Length: 264
Image 1 (cartoon, rainbow, N blue to C red):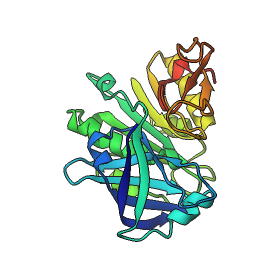
Image 2: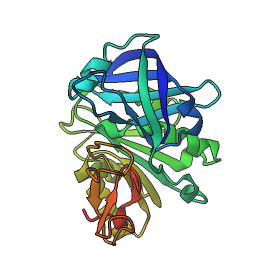
Image 3: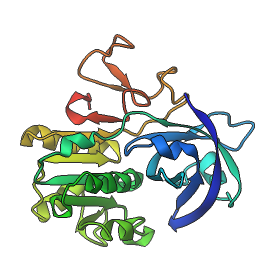
């Protein structure tokens, strides 16, 4: 485990209820796409730290970017953070996306939904750094509606071609991310994804039918974030060596798994 104190550089709204938190921390040096950090809740009565996926990291400048949705006490308190404030941080934690699996792929899809979108920005940059041509990478992002805004969309569009979907059809393709893939004739030979469970389940099923690898970043509530409490465990199709049952800890064995091993 690695606890540290992170300095707040900025905390700014991106869209309705979505904020971008920029920190200076040496944790940036070891961060990889798909990993997460645990952050202090800023309360003496709310003791558990909160897990947030890493949106971007700059090793040289020791900068870490987190994008979060306001959903409760801790995230609401974070919106008031100012430059110079400090937060206790644990991490980076977990296993990230296997970037090496993208080698020699002709069509790579990055599929995100809701607050599962931020970690894909970091992943996109790393895939390009590894030499994957931008024309081989398809970004499919699912949002609720145009009224709530398209957080991070402009940053993705600065780098690669993006397909968006909305639940209500107010922009892009109406419906699921799979609808967006189908309507735009995207037929990937590998998928990296992060988002709500129904989306991940459908992508895992798609991968099984298409015979392609689908990597899913699972989002679960965490108490300890270090693999002790087992509160974030998910069903798997095989027995875990730690717990001796068909479960895996999202914080330790995950959060990224190949979709076919999860017992959706």
